[in-house]
Image (cartoon, rainbow, N blue to C red; front, side, top):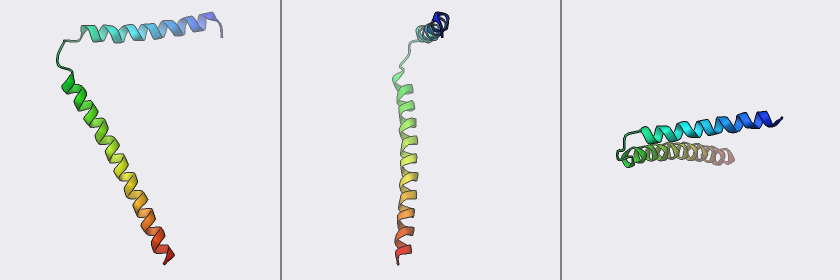
Length: 70
């Protein structure tokens, strides 16, 4: 890998950061807190569902294990 490879890689990263910055600047200024709260609530709900499913599977496996011991 030579300097050209790293130069192109750095240019692409800077281009991506520029696009993100321009999008943020050109977006209308509004109250982003409600939108962010919705995203955080959605993520928290997904995590909660995964934890509940996993705990249900673990509980079922434990109960089956105990029944096999009898």
